[in-house]
Length: 197
Image (cartoon, rainbow, N blue to C red):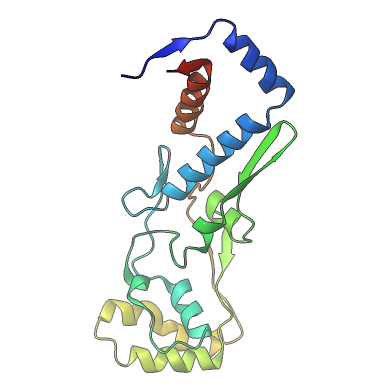
């Protein structure tokens, strides 16, 4: 059986050490926050704390345009699935990291589109080219779903060449301090106060 006992004076000693050199505690906090942020992307979660993420559009027009811009002949099935949000390539989830400087831990992503998703900002699609329209047109001729055809057919018009679409993204927080973060930090601090035998 494991026995945990309070060590007299340990709390003040540890508090003094943490004040003098907070790097260890901040590193642990950063690791907790990164772990929680990455867990938010999982299919069963799709939320950071109590902030649930909006699902993807049932026809992901911007993603489909990106596929044709990359020269693909057919968009993948995920372009027509509402979950998981923010999990197209996994780059955003994998980019979340932390750094410690002085008395501060910073958690975030260095990807240029991370803030757009986090705050729900405006974004632009790929610029529509004639080549993209030709690929899309050939694909749409084979599509048997009228709803998909009707949602995308307008993009075949020549007036869209050289232009991009804009939209305001739904706010999907990817980093932040949640109740779980606070509980994890409190538990870690509590464990440090006790000696386990």
